[in-house]
Every structure is written in C-alpha cells, then in structure tokens.
Amino acid sequence: MASTSAWLFLMLCPSLFSYVYAAPDEHLHARGAPPTPFWRRSSVPSVGFYNPTSNGGQWLTQVQDTYPPGQGEPINVVISGDSDTAVLQNQEINGGLLNYFISFGYSTECLGQHQGAPQAANLGDGLNFVNQTAEIRWDYGNPELGTCEETIEGGSHFRYWSQDGSQADSNAVFMASSYELPETDQHNIIFNGYNLGRDWLVGNVTNQTQIINSTLLTNSSEYTGKTAYGGYTYQTTAKYYSGFLPNTSYGVNHNLSVGNAQTNAVDGWLAVLTVKIVDQPQSSSARLAWSTPSWQALLLSIVAAFFLHTMALTISV
Image (cartoon, rainbow, N blue to C red; front, side, top):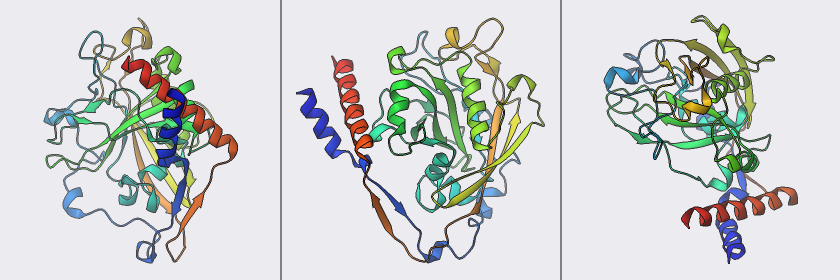
C-alpha cells in the first residue's frame, strides 16, 4: 500500500518536470531592473528595512512545540529592500527571488513537499506573526532534485518572509538561516549552526574563497561577489551589522546543543544583502522549454517520494 501511494504521490507531483520561461519583450527594454517606487522607498531606513522590534516584532521566529516552550530561531540574513525590484519578486521567472536563490546553490523543497510544521515571524509590519513563505534548501548542485538529498542528509537551509505589511512596507526579505543534521538526527542544528549557516550562505553568494570567520567581523565588514543562473547575473554586496540581533543563547531553539559556555547560539551579527541584476537574457520572445530528468534523477525522485511518504505515515501513527 505504501509503495502504491508513493507512486501516486510521484505521478501527481509537478516538480519532476521543470520549465524555463523567457520574459517577453516588454520586460527587456532596459538591462537593469525597474526602479523601486518612490512612494514605498522614501521613508525606509538606509539599511534597507525596518527594524521589526521598533513596532512589536522580533528577530526570533516562532517555533511550535519546543522544549522549553517559546523557543525561536534567529532571523540572521536580510535581502535589503534597496535591491533591484525584480529580485524581490517571489518567482523564478524574470530573474526573481527563486532564480536568485538557485544562483548561489539553494532551491525549493524536495518534490515541492514540506515536512514539519512551518515557523512564523513577526516583522513589525502590522501583520503580526506570519508563517514562512517557504523553506529553501542546499541543492547539492542539482536545482531540480538536490534538495531531496538535503532533506535526507542534512545541510544548509533557510526560511524566509517579506516585510510588506502596511506599517513597514520595505519589501525586504528576512531569512532564518542554519545548518541542520540528517533526517535520522531529527534535523537538529549542528553546533554553532545558526551563525555558520549565515556565514556559509554569505560566502556562497559573494564567492568567497575562504570561510568567513565571524569572530573577526566588525560593523565595516563587507563582501561582494557575483552569481548567475537562468541567464541572469546578480551582484551581491553583503554587510554585517551588530545591534539588531541579541548576542545570546536565551530563548533560542536547540540552544543546549547549538551553543555552550564559550559560544552563544546567536552571536549578534546580521548579514544584509543588497542585490543588483547586472546581466540578463536578451531574448525577444517568450518560450517554454520542457526538460525531462535523466533516469538517475527519476530514480532519486522515486526513492525520495517513497521516503517522504513513509516518514509521513510514521509521523501520523
């Protein structure tokens, strides 16, 4: 029965086939992204977002069923609202946010399925606590199916939200990044995994040849690099800021294993990314290009579908 259900789940899942969409002419008259509307941007702080705590928000997510209750995970990366408008659109086409994620090695969840309860964040924009837009995982070099491996083997991942409520409409993207253990270890976070998850993400997105050492960070620390995918090239400038997140283990999920007496689970550093599109496709017509995965990818999909279905049955029992 489980095998039949897994095959049915697989057949219904659209993620086995992917398409590439090239924007029509009206999106390509200018090389850069369209300007950000002045009515939204004029009052946004220079850092590119509103501080959630200025209006009742917080820098820790809301996690269900923690022990002790009320633990959260740090929102430790922000894509600035000063980034190109196209990048801040939650889509893969036209160089949007999902395409940007793929450009530095992260993609949507295995077969489009999320395991576990969503986390919520209050960004101080008047919307109170809002469930994550999605969870994005390290794709192990395969944007279509690599996140299945991350789901099973663990790795880098993040959740994200947009600050777009009427009381603080910066359009910035807030991300809770960390590095998790395999499914067999209940996806617990590795030691220092929140801080490392942030720094490894920044290293990937700015093409650093050496691992960022957070013990050497200052408020003038800045990294710049380029990534590309789907014909779009992005230039990202990452700046580190202290004074937003607390430097503490108090109230942080998994704090007993993520930190110790010498290392706080959250070190107080926030990475702010400003992203610009510096190159994009010059195609003059829209097209859909369907690609069928190789037999190896198809086999991985079947195994992943069966695994996720079995896990779901186990949890339900």
